[in-house]
Length: 268
Image (cartoon, rainbow, N blue to C red):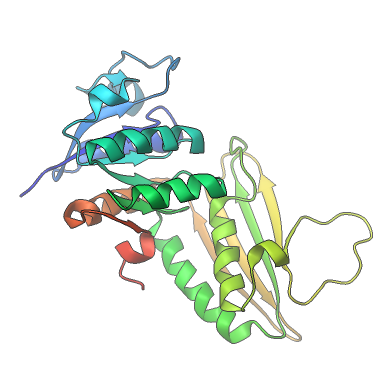
């Protein structure tokens, strides 16, 4: 059996910690590097301080030294950090699984350009269940688009810094495309005061932040006399880590290209 050498960027974050433990539990994977940004209090420490159990790898911020020989870098950080890591991976021929959200148009173009040389899985949500939900939304929107008002409600923990979530935005993009619209033209991000009647083509977003909510997403299709709701609720991060590792294994036989979880799960 071929063992994949994995590096994890953003090791001290919630997802990073879960990924470290998951990689070290998987007999088909080897944790080559645990990476953090300059200034992290965990630099120079063993990963056991993050996992509470598994150890043997020292956390470093030296991406250029740590990545050579690695097969896949799993990156759940911030857009600026991911783009920096992308340049190193592109130069070294290292594949990437990217769960970072909030990329600008220019940064998305950088990802696309890099995919001409290396293989990337880029997805706003690595959960298998969420990606099945994406498929259901595409089907529902094509059938229900006319005559149904569409609202997206998402809830996350108090520490999440972007809103709406990348997953909610991707849901909006799927629904907009399925109904023949461009999300940038029909999205409504919150309402206040006298807003007037709802326009039929709009897609509304509502954001909730509080406590330790891992991630809840609901898309509502509200018609006359009935309402259809498609929801996904995550109770822990195992669903995201399992999906990320599945994506890493998917890249094992890919040389280059830009993929998402729909490709990984065969839902195209």
